[in-house]
Length: 113
Length: 113
Image (cartoon, rainbow over the protein chains, first blue to last red):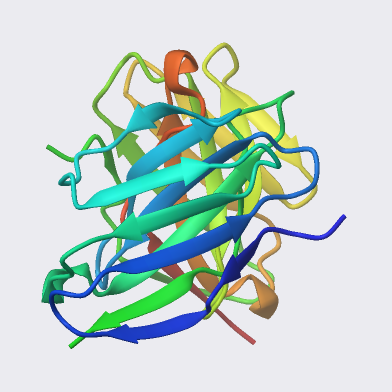
């Protein structure tokens, strides 16, 4: 099976702009989670979607939003970008049989200038 | 309050010896624990997991030990190989939020030939 894919891999945006990141999960996986990784920090949970419904949400401001489509593909949107949003954004999908185990994509490196 | 902590940012071992990576957690409700490995420019890769009903799980060269009373888990790699050099993340989940994992900050393992 193909792994989790994320597009784009790299992105440079200006403060105040908005950005949309895309994630395609492993075929058959219905759970998609998003994480933010900043230098020197571990992965911070953003949100999780399952069958188009947001099931869990982390402690991020409302500028961070997401959605999931009927084919399980997911998008994450960040509005009014701030310099501190510069990070690696990772998407992970989980098989329905074991939602704990997450399979990560390579990430989207977002730089806000 | 960081619920999952990896107190050693880095670890260096000789090829063929044992690598022991440690992880502590504060939330006694966590019931599933995982280890991930991450190479530069790639997303984390699931390595091994353990349920809170067990105290040991083994998969080839990798063994995870769980001490619930101490709220501590460890990953043993025997024998260590240069290809094991990577950042290792410990993660914990609740059964009510299986798609959401809480990660430690990671430990960089270097295995010297």
